[in-house]
Image (cartoon, rainbow, N blue to C red; front, side, top):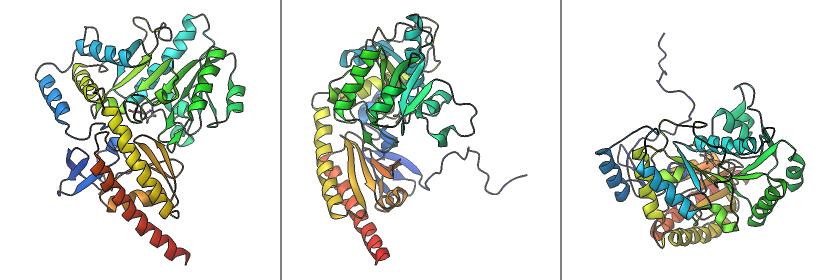
Length: 401
Ligand SMILES: *Cc1c(COP(=O)(O)O)cnc(C)c1O
């Protein structure tokens, strides 16, 4: 039997009817030549925008040399990228993956192994927070705890205890003799751009120290310059024991990493974990090229400057259209607009202005521009948001009249 609507792909994505053919910086161009201002950036992936010359050149020249060798051999690009990450963070050790979920899997396994080799195999439970998103593998949907992602996939992977976001009492009550770690996003991305205040992150660090727990940060979305620091937790002055990174570090090439202190990673010895593709020469070349740009002097200051332009402009728009946008959230270029109208309506209204954004939980839309966006492009974005807000505001007023 053939179905007229049959198409070969899983129906897991509700896709917009847009077909992009190429990208240039902050712009995406459709097959028909329509240009869209890309403030979704592949959901915080295209950190340097589209077709960045340094990334294109790097990928091309690596493609002519070597694509893949197994992790049973030395991979010099891996050593180099690992060392650069170690030099610029809290970490002593790095494991490379292909995705955020795999980086989280490594983080979870690292935390469990740490307690195991310390002679406490019973300490395997990890505390997570409502609204979290950590990926779509069986363990990471259990960690994220969202019913819509768990439903129908059999028993939830054991060992994750979820507490309400920002509820210190519930958090303390959830800690028991089996607790191994606390896992948190410094800013919940998918959950609605909800930031953990700096003093709460510091309190979490202290709580972990007092209770002998490891602190795992999920910086898959908030990391690699997105907030105007290399990693979002740097704003609070704390350091995690383990951290998952992905998205922006590959600039569009599938790449993730799990970073850890030597102490936290001490159980991850030869043979206990592995990957076929993780850290392959193509990915390492691109990851190193992304860092070339992000670690350049002045780059993070640029992100902070553009973020300030956006923040001030968005505050003004939300002041003038409170019946459309009730709150501006986020840090750096991980921005959220709390929408009064359904967020899908706002995403569509912006698409009508040829601007791309992405929805999030809590009726928020996310603005995640490439970090290379200029001030002029930020102002262009603001005028498109203003135009959409004005139209939505008129409709809302007409409806209530
Ligand atoms: C996207 C994301 C993940 C999952 O990354 P994948 O590459 O899709 O597996 C995990 N955590 C956070 C915070 C994310 O934003």
